[in-house]
Length: 84
Image 1 (cartoon, helix red, strand yellow):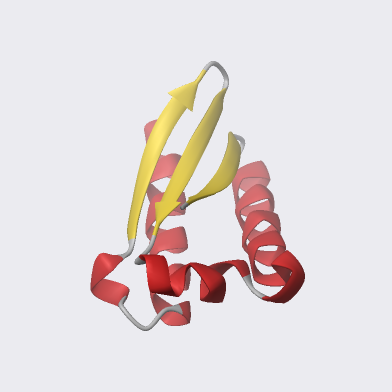
Image 2 (spheres, one colour):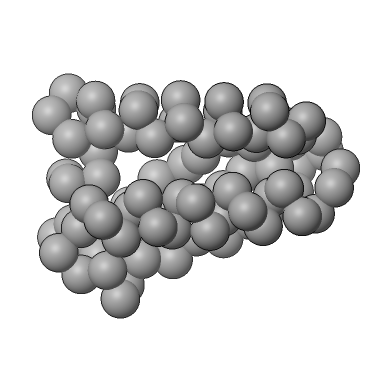
């Protein structure tokens, strides 16, 4: 798996999450390779968790869809986990 597309995805998720939260300085994304799949762990301030998940999980689903599509276009397998 190429490292460059994953770094771009980390930057993309970081930028998207910072636009959603009240405390953008506390947004952190860590990349963890698990076999052929890379898991992106998104960390936000506890009070911002609801803003990243959204009503009924809509924002979280949208973020995962964007990440999955960008990863597919880059030829890598990536999943997004929102860590509470």
